[in-house]
Length: 425
Image (cartoon, rainbow, N blue to C red):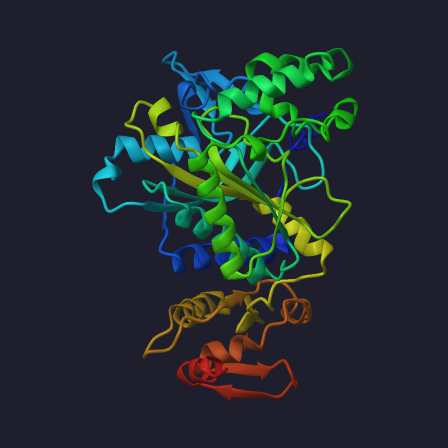
């Protein structure tokens, strides 16, 4: 007996019933991003491993445990894309985008892949809406990215998403802070989780955002990066907060909010859902002024965010928010005689193409050989506006029987008359 296959663990099939949510979320992302002047970019699903697995990336779950890494037949060392930023930065450098007006504003809606523990709203193959603004170091662009993400959530109806904010310093002030952090945790490591024991030397800032239970009691007493910022970082962070106040975007300073990679600097932020039982942020971002240099380019500032499509849809459903009414078929062609199938196909093609300035119509064709009753039942199930019945009589006279499914009234019309009627709202 043939094996019955199921999808791999941590992936999902996006069925027709869920497509309205996906169209709504993606269309909103495109509309909002373009309204801020961002242009769409798509990078390959796989990249050379070095794009993501660089010095400075150690100590993160993505690099240490979650990357799908493989060698192809040419022995190239490749990874499936685990996140969007590094690939976009690689494309920025490869295609000479630094010669264009800066900042370079880019957005993407892409699938990513991580060998993560599946849970609600988190998959091993997942989609992400993200933006990158490359080539501007000032705090104004930081606030623009926050404002854009806030506008996206508000456009979907997730107006209660709350912003958490922090500054994680830069190469001037962070080294001294890391030494204070190591000193604080030195006598506590034997009581902490195994992940944090590994991170202590490689990436100590990740100790602050660990979600494992043994590590929670120590967070409150840890030194705060905000108390150790240099003057330049303090000024930058102060301006970010002032501009957010000017925009009326409420926020909470969260000292444990970090971006653990070495190339991240200064502004870090996340939007948390209003559902207090949720353990995952809706989305977040940060400034990465050191990344382009790590990928072989000149020192260039950048900032961006990523927000999961699946997680956004999950929160929309929890909030009872639904897409607008989907466009229903304009007409369903019921074929009452198998000999009329060719004529019915011609009518369907003509109506779908539109003409004489009319918009193309959505037309579903029935299956020749099925009973007229079953075809009409199908038309009603699909909430079609009209049914067009084509049988032997219609084939002979080259006319159509047009039935208004809202009131069951029908009349015999020419194909042109049918097109005119269907084009009316």
